[in-house]
Length: 162
Image (cartoon, rainbow, N blue to C red; front, side, top):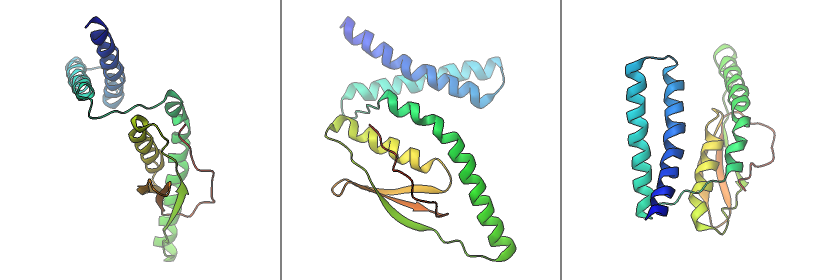
């Protein structure tokens, strides 16, 4: 029982701390009432995540290496926002059409069923967080992900979750 409590406590804290830090970043000011509200909201969300985990029905097991790839997201958001602004400008000023397109990229979910949900979520968020492209669907049978891009960018190496 002690081991279970210790394990859940670490899991709970692993949700509480980042959620609370995110809350503080969102409010971007120190206000006592907002800070206390953020503590309660983070505790409630961490408790809910722990309760869902205890049911055993949902397993989300990302790897730390996946989170380390976040440093690439900021520059991508900036570059793709600029590209979309330029396309919109050309559309408004010159009347040029905007031609989005669909394409597939290879994507292996892997054999570990416990990580499959995490891999799908990380790939979908990683592709869709920048404004130019978003994941439409993942075909597990053919090991592909269908992506829609608004601005055609040169083919890049597919991002791989390990």
